[in-house]
Image (cartoon, rainbow over all chains, first blue to last red; front, side, top):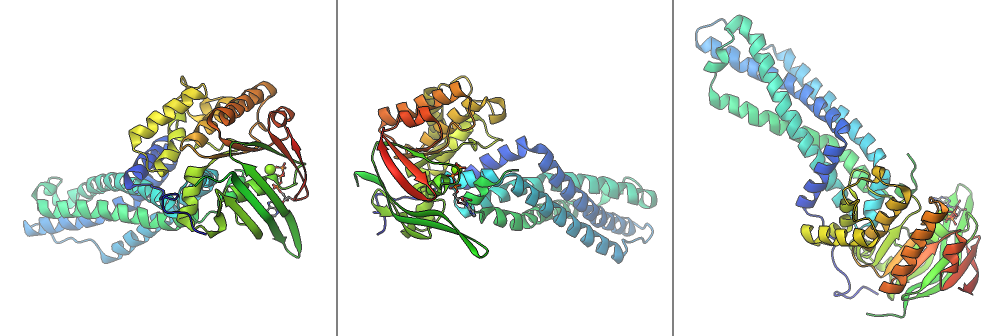
Length: 204
Length: 230
Ligand SMILES: Nc1ncnc2c1ncn2[C@@H]1O[C@H](COP(=O)(O)OP(=O)(O)OP(=O)(O)O)[C@@H](O)[C@H]1O
Ligand SMILES: [Mg+2]
């Protein structure tokens, strides 16, 4: 026998609800979030350093300066560093899931569906990616200016095409958010599949 | 729909396979609980009280038998309907409170209204009212760590009431509280049962809690040993 339509309804959890709750989690468990943000920022600043240096060297070359370029093997290092930061975040998020076993179980008692739990974790990682991206870009820009400065002059950034810089900025921050969210997918999925009975019995 | 028996358990069994052994946590429970009734579930440790709660609350699936809530066999519900049942029909109270540590008392109590789809402001208002009713109007912005055990359990009770459920399931609600605080919680729950007509099912070792109830279900080794009038 199924419940009558008027007797049953749908549980809700909108993106706005997830944002509200996710922000609360980030704010009040700031240490955890900062680890993830630092991890993203580190990997990303390495990436932006390379990309912006490349841009600044080519700007310098266009203006008649010497021909220096970022070696291609350095891009391999960048790729590796990004993978390392993904692994770091996945790890930190898995620990966050263990820490929240009981809370996840409790939320399921209050009506949360699996995908609501996933959404909550993804919202958190979105914000962490955003902040990590902004911080990482700033560090990357600064270090690119310093690195290229000795060869090309410290004011070369002023001659670099604005549009290219903007594209790099948007690309870097988007990359950071994407990496952060990809890294969180597996932990979030694990969390959502928790059986409430086991989750509630779990003692940390 | 209004069934007299808000909860009906039929031949309810829950076995756990532990390697070659089978633990019969529940072994054929037959029980009806009427709307507005206050029932205490009593029994030694390991007799199956928590297992029973998990099944009645739709948190676990029976090995055999059925749980009917308002005449509906809940094993027939899909994930969405089950979530809705947990959200709207049942309020859970635990021995260890299980509040969300990063949220304030107010946010904890309003959380179930989020899942119920209540507008944010309305949910907060409701939560404030409930916290007032459990005597915590001056603590609404405190986090669980900033509250005493008794106050935390009051928050948990307010949270359990947030969506006006028909049934309150309380698993040893006074188990982590001292005598006086426990007494206050019992009075609070008993009052809710009487004034709101809530069906209250509580597992307990607490004699005072047992005395207040309409019926006492004695369990042993996964079966109902006897049922007493309170
Ligand atoms: N996940 C599980 N796996 C295996 N056995 C279990 C599991 N959960 C409970 N049991 C067993 O089921 C029986 C009933 O346990 P339950 O937790 O329901 O008892 P209880 O009456 O709530 O006890 P207490 O008063 O100590 O809380 C016990 O023998 C227990 O060991
Ligand atoms: Mg128990």
